[in-house]
Length: 226
Image (cartoon, rainbow, N blue to C red):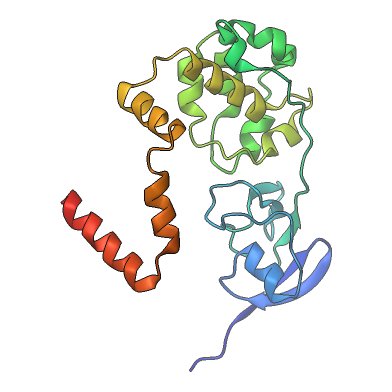
C-alpha cells in the first residue's frame, strides 16, 4: 500500500501537515479541531462553512466552502466566522403586495453602487452585484432566478462596503414574489390533509415498526406506486 502523501498548509496562522486531497473541514478534523459551528451538510448546500484562502503565489484572497475546498501545498486558510447582517422584521402573511415595500423594508438597497465586491466573494459564482441592480430596477423575477443557488453563507455581506446584506434582501424578494403566486390545487389539498392529520394513524404505525416490518412496508408501497 503506497505511503499517504501530505501537504503543508497554514490554517489561521498555524503551520500544519494534512493528507493530500483533504477538504478544509477534513483537515480541521484530522488535526484535532473540535468544530461545533461552521459545519452543516458537508455537501456544499447549507453555506455554514465559509472560508477565505490564499493560494501559493496568489495575490488575491479567494472565498469558498470548507467542505468543498481542497487544500493545496502552502495554502493559507482561515475559517470565516458568522457575519452579522440586518434582517428586518416583517409579517409577510399580513402584507398586501409585499414586493412594493422592498425599499421601505430594506432602504439600504439604494446605496448599492455595483462595485462587484459581493460577486467576487460568492462561492456559488452568482453575479450578486447584477442581482442588486435588477432589484433596484424592479426586475424581481430575473433577480430571483439568479439567486436560486444562493446558500445564505453571508460572504457577499461581509465584503460590502455599504453594509448591505444581499442574501437577506434576496430572501425577502423570493418570499414576496411567492406570496403573490396562486397556490397549486394539489399543494393546497396536501396542506389541508396535513392540517387535518389525515396520515397521523399511518405514521403512528410506522414509528412502531421494527426493521423487518419497515422494510416490508416500504417494499409494499413501492410496488403499489409502480
